[in-house]
Length: 301
Image (cartoon, rainbow, N blue to C red; front, side):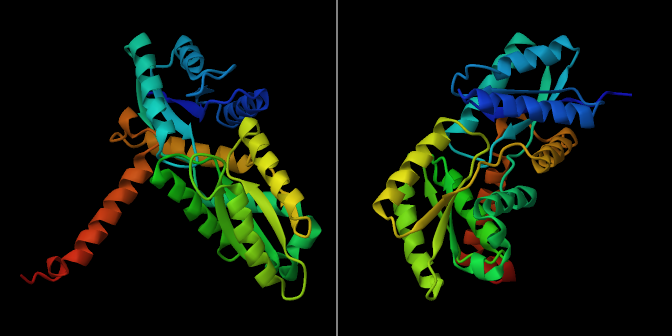
């Protein structure tokens, strides 16, 4: 019987040791829950100080692994980050010519991860978040890292819409830490307008919710931007929520992506981090063609 491929979790590079420790914890949890699957994880992209992806691959090969199912620890499918993952895997193949790999889709916005985001909001708000009237006067600012790729940025907007649906908040706005607009101060300005409109005589409040996995420099930059805006607007209550982290739901989503990748022979290294985006692009293009040429759907000429 052919053994299952190993699971390789590929996170985008972080120099923050707490991020590396969080990934180690995720790898350990998955290894304990699925002892039949070799599991390793590492970071690619930003020259991480610890836990590089290359060493994770080398460690799996040393354990006799010849096949990998790679799960990108990414929330968005496109942008400059996924371009680095196929390159990292190509280097691994050069070092280990007998090593084969397939690559799964990005993780967000998965429904289980949206549940985690809601829990982070509840933690920031306290017990009052469970009262409908409290949520009705709360506006959320979901903040992504920001890229130069519109498709990647659009995924943050999609997550915001899904987070807003049915959860009772006054609204969920979006902003980005860098590289694109709106920036965090502009997003907070928009939230203040919505919070005032939703307050109906009660003071509105804003919760700033990071849309990334790990703490580190990006989170510190977000907090500095938030604190600067809050100091300039003392009449507005601004709360900060925690990052997604590595809760049990994340382990479940990673394994779901692993099984999908391991069972799909059509996946390849070229699709790393971009498979969902490509499918969305094809569906959008098809819809546009049908709208432009309705006769194509009716058989008329």
